[in-house]
Image (cartoon, rainbow, N blue to C red; front, side, top):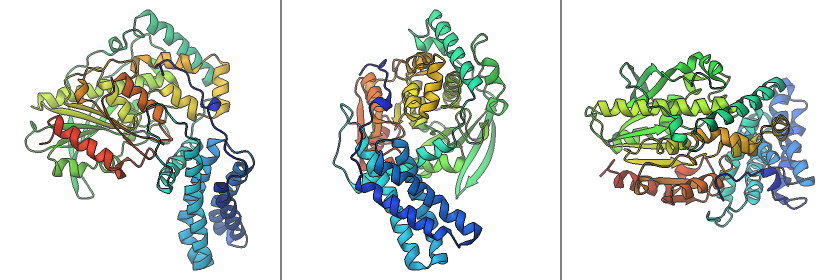
Length: 480
């Protein structure tokens, strides 16, 4: 598939069988939860009605009109909530009935994953693998996350949708006139050295690290659409990073770039297993906080505005992240660091791949479970009514993709040598479908890749990923 291919998943979903057996656990669990809702007091009613409504409200439609992936997402969320609430229900309704609630809810969770796995299209060049309940459980985790994201999505107002389409159209013509669509690397200016950094010692769960703060220094070009709005995001002007440094700064470094809605030290350090990398492998680590995340957030949740808002905000977010990453690389080199690898997860994998198109002097670039095409992701995950609305304003998936070209890893030519590029991803990833990683793999001239038979969040549990990371660190000189 070429990079310019437009995909609308609404045209690609494969309808399931009528009355699928995998929907029945949700129906039964929902009825059982609702039967306990009445006569349990206000708190008991709320705690029982929430999983009951989610499970029954998704189980019945899946039985009658299967094929809607969003139903599977909310079924998984209901199963997860029911499993957690069911443990407490054992105290309220008795051990036996409570255990039945837990069992049916957990089965509903896995069944939702099984339904989604069955509807996952087979992508060319991606291994299929046999179905299993383990894979179903992993997919269900993705489904529950997608339901949470959908429920907390900040939907642009009608006026904002008009503005989004207008800014995208202006940006397309501006970028084309300046040659950025043909040479996207020319959009990114070389940042100044990073000299003033505030360092504060911190400790979390027995792990010592430092909290770095510095002024970002990034500004969009004077005449770019959305510049004033972007500069109004005051918390975003200050950059943050978590630092784990040995006494010898010339030791190999690994830059770890977190995923979407992360940016908190506990989450970031645990996701990258920082203690093992720092103490076990002896690496110096730095974990930057991406724009609009963590202490830099501008909405209710970390990451709000990065993916689901205005495309120009996405362009500026990625461009600012790359600007700051390059400043950090310069800061490390100024301290004596010579061997520097970059490893990113999900959204961080996107930035790792894009950074490899701007910086060739990296020991390795390891995008893990990476998004690579924001336009395709938005058209896959956004509510259909929202997509119809923005399309009515003239913003198509193809036009959004053209706007994102200046910050797309599928359009930036990699400068890191092929033998130092590594990739991994899940064959049944629901958050970032496998075609996104497949396209980057092809764009990168098919370097080493590890496909594991699972979903987005389950990569730490697959040996193929651990083996690839071990080899990448050794072959790039980060470890011996």
